[in-house]
Figure (tube, rainbow, N blue to C red):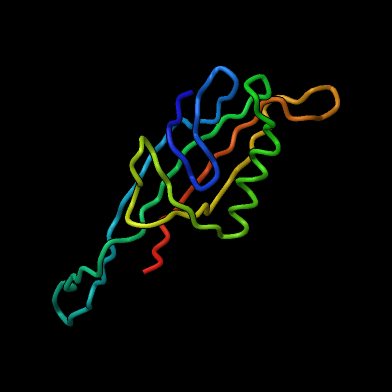
Length: 133
């Protein structure tokens, strides 16, 4: 079994029986600035500090690989709505300075069977750093 990482109880893994992983992982960082207006001159810039980092990725769920796509996507949606904060670990290393929250989930139901059950689905996930301290 190849464990890629985790987000709380969600284990990112690839094995013969189960695939719960992600693609298109991106992380963005930015800083916060304030411009102080001055008469007859350009504004003076003031660095306020770093902004919260943002991570985006796509998770694909396929019933053929031991997943219940709808249940997996609904768990992400539930965590988003709860504001649940968890540690994100990739490759054995915690990412960021503290924890992360899911701020957005978009469910894409790609393939359904004849009864309307989702066979293949994708979730576009956006996370933001959560600073407790």
